[in-house]
Image (tube, rainbow, N blue to C red):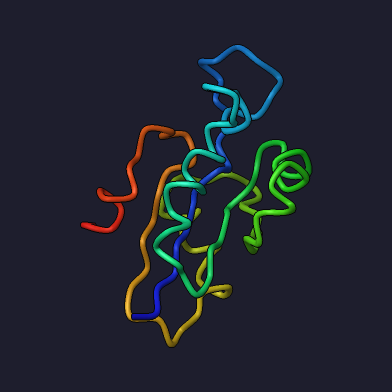
Length: 115
């Protein structure tokens, strides 16, 4: 079954009080967003799209080897707007699109598969 995976990674993370984009903060040796990408990888999506915004260049450089397609949300106008930015990059032949948050490192593959 063909599937898109969209990972939202555009937020500022102002509550973290850091210049580093929120999704690049590390947990157990990997960035938060890398945990999400690793959990999604076994789903074998036809296309994985990462939505960037705040610190886009830094996030895209950190994930350059992931094979993901990047789209930018500029300016950041909320979650719905973020997903709208990904629509042109979707594989329209896919049966489903799974949207994941890039700052939820404890997502499990089994949970994503069930969604």
